Structures are given as structure tokens and as C-alpha cells.
Length: 300
Image (cartoon, rainbow, N blue to C red; front, side, top):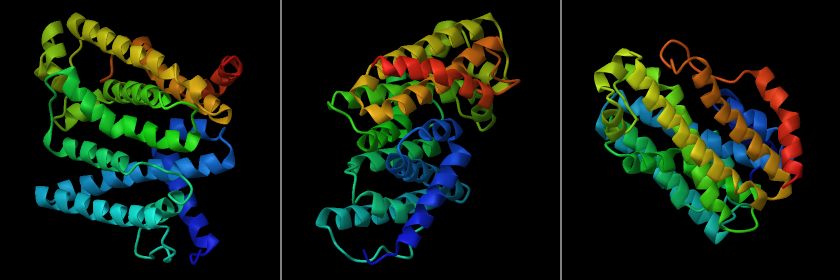
């Protein structure tokens, strides 16, 4: 190809750095992938981060700037997909940022449906105008767009034996995003966002004012137990698809799932108080989980 391998390697290294910084749990799990797969998943996570950052930066200016930022990304992405589809041999354009530079190379070897990054952008846009979700069905759409799409894109790199694996990847994405929502409730409330369905808050007698003030009572704890149970159901469903993945990808996905699900354990351990301390898994916990998960994967 006209672009030098050094330039491409630089782009992938940049994507790895972004992933390491902003997706620590996945970065840890991805280390167990074969190098070609490991390198290929980094641009996906870097893309998510850059779209999110672009919208955040534009949102501080105006709604028009947000739309303009997304349209710019869509246009460049469309060009990249056209090049991949027509197998155009033009040089990789130097005016792209490094993430899109890596994507152009990625699409030469992996068929990632274009609707998936477009759906991701729609999900990021939802954060600019939707501060509340009335029902879980509404929240599901958001979770699918910002999280399941990432799993579906990654699946095209990880490899699978049956397309039903994509349904399980979707479920795992929902589980992880629900976990994010529970973990980040304090940070989201600080900017006026409550992702938990309003119907659930009413069901358990929890007011939006209570969430925004970070107040915990018995009603809040019961509501949290319900939300954690729902997330765990999606983890269980998602993990059913791991046996359908290529063998060298299974451990990474199960490890990522278990590391993320452990955040729910930590929320329980701190008596559902997500306002005083942000629940997280330590590096030691991640390391100690490896042998058991490795044995489990060997049985798949």
C-alpha cells in the first residue's frame, strides 16, 4: 500500500494508548488475544472515545456544533467505507486523525458493518438531548447504541462460528452498560442525568431529587438490588455465546465479562452506596480471577 507501515503502526499504537487510558478492564483482558486480534480491536475502542470527546467538546458550544461534529465524522467514515468497498488503492489520507487512519487499514481485513459505528454515533448524540428514560425499553436502545455496537464490531475481529453469537454479544453489551450506569450514578447526577428508567424509580418509591442529592434509604437499596439482578441476567445471557467464538478469543471475552460484573459485587459490598465511593475492580482482583476463568474456558 502507498502508506508506509510505520505510519500505520503509529496509528495502531495511538489507538492502543487511548484504549489503555479509557477502557482499562478491556485493555487488561485484550492482552490475552493473539497480537493481530489485539491490535485490531484497539481502533474500535479509540473510535468510541474520540466520537464521545468530539460531541462533548461541541456540546459546550452549541447544539449546531454537535450536529456539525457528528456529520463530519459520518462523512469521513463514509469515505473510508467506500474506499474499502471499492478496494481503492489511494493512499490513506494524511488529514485524518490517527483513529480513522487505523480504521481505514482495519477495514482492509475485517468486515465491520457500517451501520454499527453509525448507531454508536446516534447513541452518543442521545446524551446531548436525553436526560431521562421513561421505560427500560427506551434505555435499552441507548445501551445498545453505545455498548452493544462495540461488542458487535469487536465480534467481527474475534471471530464466531454462528451468527447467533451476535445476539449474545448484544446482551453482554447491555449488561456492561447497565453496570456503567449503576457505577457512575453520582457523576451522571452531577450533570443532571439519570439513566435509570423513571418507571423503576416510581416502582420502588425513589425520587429523582433523591438521586440528584445522593440520598440512600431502604427504597433506594431495593431498587439497586433490582437493577443489579437485571444486569446479571444479561451477563448470564451474554456469556452463553462465548462457546461460539473462536477458541483464541474466548478467554478474553469471559475475562472481560467477569471483571466488569465484579463491579456489581463491589457495589453490593459497599452497601449500594454509589455516591460516596466509585465501585471498581483492582488490578490484584483481575489477576487473581485469571486461573478460575482459564479453567472454565477450557471446558467450553
